[in-house]
Length: 160
Image (cartoon, rainbow, N blue to C red; front, side):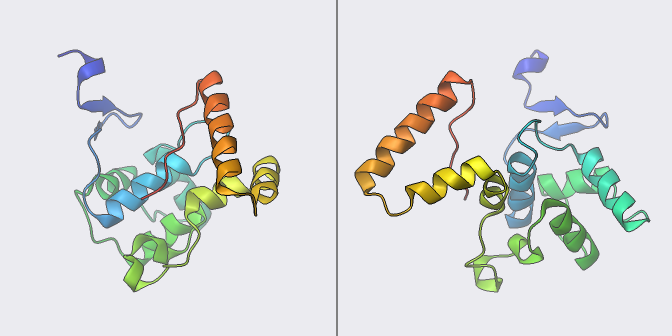
């Protein structure tokens, strides 16, 4: 099997990162943040980048890149309050984001939406679309899908 067809991919810390879906609610939500919350002019953050930023902001060693990888893949599933708070702060979400809806955050805005709405142009389009009919919104969605295709971007999928 060649590297392109392998279910594992190498990451910058030299460890294999399981390319299969993360197991467990915490792992799925953390992995979703990694995939969706990042500046639009670059790709997703890496585990080492997040660990380094958290540790630098705290002025101490709060979390390792290995532990982040374990949390993202579900190999570890019981982070401390300090880890949850640090990860939530880095990605700009409430710590409640990581818990089941009945535990809180039911009405919380998904983090990928918060990130998208930080862009003035995206916010202007969203506000201009408010109140339009379902037919008009579907036409706008088709136009956006076509523009994403022309720019070589994947179609945005709704968050879980």
